[in-house]
Image 1: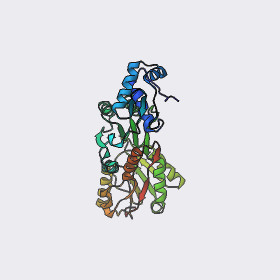
Image 2: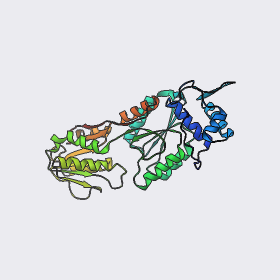
Image 3: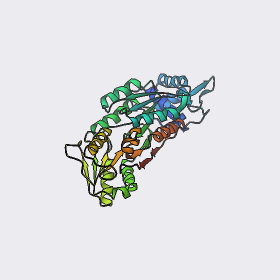
Image 4: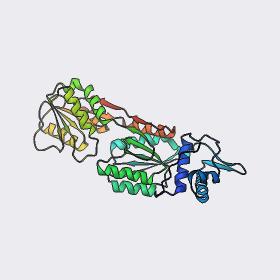
Length: 341
């Protein structure tokens, strides 16, 4: 049965490259078995309505990548899945942070020395994101992407991936870009369910306070699922709740209030205000931070956090890539109880 190939005439990717990419995916996903005979040049030309020259170019590219061999007088055969050692992986992150460093370190450690891994940062700029894709599309076999876009930027990012990464191996972390033409694997967070579950585990501590305030910076690209999960938990459990989309103002902290802090710079502010006003975290006020870091383990003798398991995310993504697993998996999200709540 011929491999289904959707050749896009208007694509910036040449037809021979589209065909080679399709065969590469077929071999890597075992749709084409090892040592299976492939169509001849004439058959390939007829099957997909392309010229002999285009068919020959596609097979030459596959031979160069070591994915097929030609046997004189017999034809072309699939060799095997592409060897892991041939992978060249680009990690494309939205920003640098302790959490992203944890993902990077665990990913590189899990990949081992079999493949090369590079890291680039697009700083949540969709234009820079596309520029990096365009400049590196032919240099890497695999792209591991943390997409951090909302609204129109999300659409532009998806179009950039479709335009430049046709036939590449794509892995998403934290979230995905919806409606992609290209297949992908992913290790994602379910932001709404994650925060709901973490707050549910912290109920016995939260009951000691009369109000919960979530500080969610208006300019962040974090998922609004965090807000939905927060509201759902507070409604289901009868908590007085408020979401604040700006930083801390000059007002003092309120006794009997839990402060849920997303950004680390806001955490610094609330810790400083607590000390100035002689408010004891875990008694007078509660502090619950988002995403763990070494600093949060020692500040105020430990800040309670709800956190993605960043090391686990990196490890799982690497394992999926090495084992050629095509799936969307949810990553672990945990509550780590310390003295601030």
